[in-house]
Image (tube, rainbow over all chains, first blue to last red; front, side, top):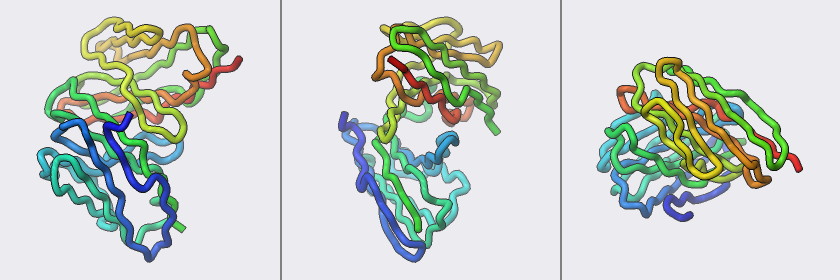
Length: 115
Length: 109
């Protein structure tokens, strides 16, 4: 399944580094999402973009900065992260977030470790 | 906020049946999803329920009772490859999707 791809799959970074996560969807969807998944915790929605416009920022710290240049690509820029930011970062896409049956399709995630 | 509860872990034998329960308290309801997530992989869509009743898809079935705020995912004829985490997610009236913490199912030979 290569509908939603994410790079890199694994990332180790220091607290002073700047890095970016990339997501690309090949499904022709209009909406893209960033989620954070920590062990034994529910997926936490971070950002939502619909038709390239940010429609949701779920009180995410400013050290996480999203960018959506078009409906197929989504980035998450990281800077001065904390060790508690270590988690699996999942990207998802869907056709229409305003529909009840709208199904989100996920990428494999980036496993981030902050030292 | 939203409250979605599901058991943390379940263990079953190959060929058996396992039922994963999910209860929810959310601000409105616009459907309930089940996802399967193998370790280190993407969550994959299993089912969607918006009306009360049972939806069957091969070995997997999902049930919903809106009045009780309750759903279950039924896995029949368990196979080793069914060992995974199963995520319950509810869409509220603002169309936001909230997830439970997931149930890790271990299938033993």
